[in-house]
Image (tube, rainbow, N blue to C red; front, top):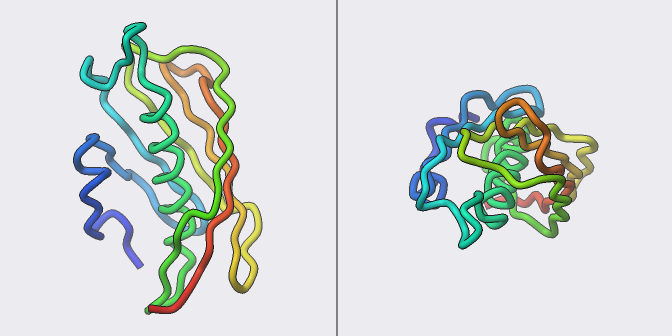
Length: 127
């Protein structure tokens, strides 16, 4: 499966670019724009959450069989420091893939500094 060629309107809306999705890992990139900032003029936490969620989905997507899909069950994000006005990079990986649930993690970087770490679980199902 090729996540980079799949239709993902929400990721397109925010400007996410999946630059790699293979072998249970992914890399996502987001160019900074002031419209992504909160009232404190740093990137809104929801943008970082969404980037991590998309990254984890892309990592898992690379391991799915034809006709399988995945959906987020839960995600926990720890924010270490504010981000911006620099671009964001998200590196994600599948930690454990069971028959119906997979565990993932994402590291989000801004200006080469770790700004957030996320862990999550996703359901896998046939369409």
